[in-house]
Length: 177
Length: 448
Image 1 (cartoon, rainbow over the protein chains, first blue to last red):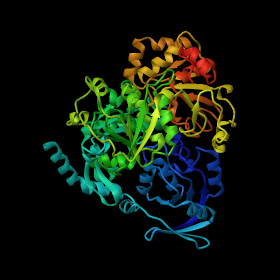
Image 2 (cartoon, chains in turn purple, blue):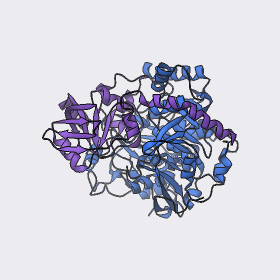
Image 3 (tube, chains in turn purple, red):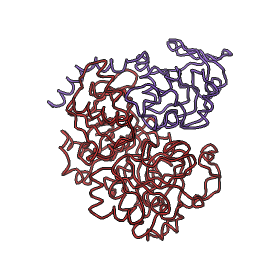
Image 4 (cartoon, rainbow over the protein chains, first blue to last red):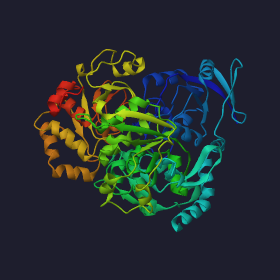
């Protein structure tokens, strides 16, 4: 999988999921209709998004996606056209949600983040785990190999579904002991 | 035994060690609420038919917006209701519900040695019972409902030892805020926290829940307190024992196996209040906004370094949420509100219907009403800006909840997190109290 696109730089640490998608919009029973509310939890973030409406790769600060577990944050980013988020670190639940929704979560160190944030566009090769800036700087990243297989969509539940027989056997043995 | 309590409990639930540090991890109980459950339930039905791993292991609660605000939230509640009925899943609904993290322990659905998952980050509250309980996304919750497991990386274990004794008017909320302030908003990312020490031993289950509730605010996967006589006394007339809970009551060992130890002296803990836009950005009541404070946070909060928070008029007080809506929280607030009048709109929201009834049997509702505060039904309330007291741009609210993020309680709304004692004092004064004012209102000695 290759991703190329324009960059939205939000160089702030601790962008929590309330800022990504405020709770007043969590009133759906299925994903959909959330993209227009992306980043409306914080005026500064919303303004930067409005100024870069066709961006598809987000470069953010540390601990991206902290706070609420709402998967709506990943849904809103996907619906608004984002394919990848690059940050120094991700909060645990958001990281899992990103993988489960085909949103590639890329961790880079500070120099890599700075170069990516300054680049108007980026090219990401998910298979070889590299990101290349418009001026040709190349950075390697590492994805979780198991969760990488979930990125294609629907993979997480299919993976667990296939495990049900062995899970039931484990649970039965636990009761027996 | 050499491993920590957390490690031993974790290992007892690993069905399979997966590549790359992930575990196929068994979940004994799934908690399902109306905001995050329906999309996953619908996805399961669409892709796998109408089957679940074990409906008896699921407890459903309409809690976030209950009763519904509008057609959309009514649809969410209706979906959860219909889905629960179809599968024979226990549901707690309008009239018999409460915040899931409050209701689950009250009805005995969490026991020592259990694992629990829920599409809600404050699921860590339940760690107070010596369980491993953590928040997950909708897809991961759906996986737990479909297959009984989640795929999760095992966290390292951090020990937070809280020695000494807490001195009023400091409360468990101030301990929780102190832990988050000490660790930082992401300081426990990748860790589970075991809270130990004399101050934790002395806490009631309600106070331990307040403490564990905010583990996520330091980025931790979860937090827990080992079960003891206090845990046993709380649970003895609630629910059914978990199969091997005696093993966990009896578990000993673990010293020295922690990846990190943080020491906190409860004798030094004073009432805290947040000045910023994450729960780690707090300071002792009466201090000035720190000189090195984040400019972005201060701009949002309408504050400058060196200012004192008691100089600002507030617009609202909220006493409630999964952090501070239990009976002892309400009693603490009532003690201050008794015979006084609130100066700003004050919303008091019990955590469950059972707590509401218990509070009313003590006459707390009359104290709140006499003070001019609004005593509501049980719900998550305005904590997350979905109902019952949402803030407008620039409004300043002193809240006993757990998050002061930008926009959390309404776009542009400003939230100062504090204990029920501080919040009730703020309601009476119309602004945050100074330590001297708080001491006068509580009758406690002035905090150092």
